[in-house]
Length: 60
Image (tube, rainbow, N blue to C red):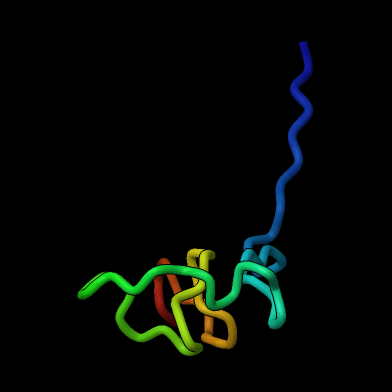
């Protein structure tokens, strides 16, 4: 039995919202949870539009 598997490079994966997305600035302000949003309201994505993605894992 053979297993078919695709391995992706994590540097190629970008799940951030794009500027102008319908989900940008559509979230609700929650004290101490959504602090630091960049537009008129928090974005509905996990990361704010225009903010660098966090670095996870070992640092160089």
